[in-house]
Image (cartoon, rainbow, N blue to C red; front, side):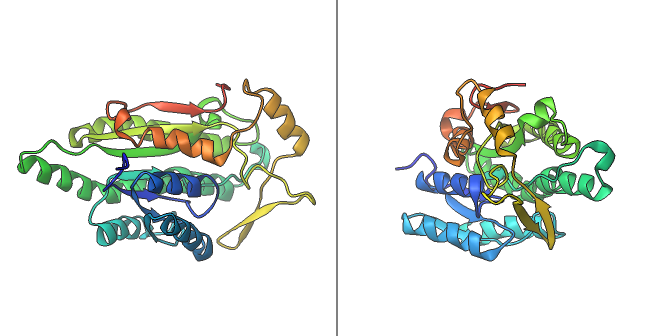
Length: 276
């Protein structure tokens, strides 16, 4: 028996990196997962890995910022698995520049993916969550404890030069979490944030030849951190190193299991001891 047996989880941005680790971690403990990615191949790869390990998962491919995506994402969970118990808002990327070089497009893109998309997903989920809680109580049962984990960053807690757009969006995630914890407490839903520090992913690793980038709806976005800057950043972390995607996923898992059923409205920093 897993701690998450029978639970249904949405994990956005779970075809690769931290999101894929979160999806696999929750599935390994019994949750049924709706995997999301911009691209079909990585989404289906995560689904295949979960199924190969004996778990249950389906894919919902698409951009979390697209109109109608939130409703499709939630409906996939309900139609495939009959309910919704866990929402992890993980999808995102960075698009950096100092403020005088930051375009409106860069500003809007960060708020759209990190703040507007989670808002829309949570709004779309509300009717299902409230009706489930009401049905359980009408049947003489206490409402099951459902979970929301929103992903923020140390940049959202303390700022980071060159990331005013990303930092503003991630700070907004904390406000969203605190407000929704107060709204959804009546449904027995806990709403928390995990703020990641330096985690080694494709967004921080620079290829040996340099010039790393990702494709977001046809836009090539430069990613990666200069190796010297990355090494200096690691030296500032009390544990002396960046975290791994598996370690990042572990912090999210903590807020999804029954042991955290009375923890809500909080921000857990997963940063190896580094704090803002």
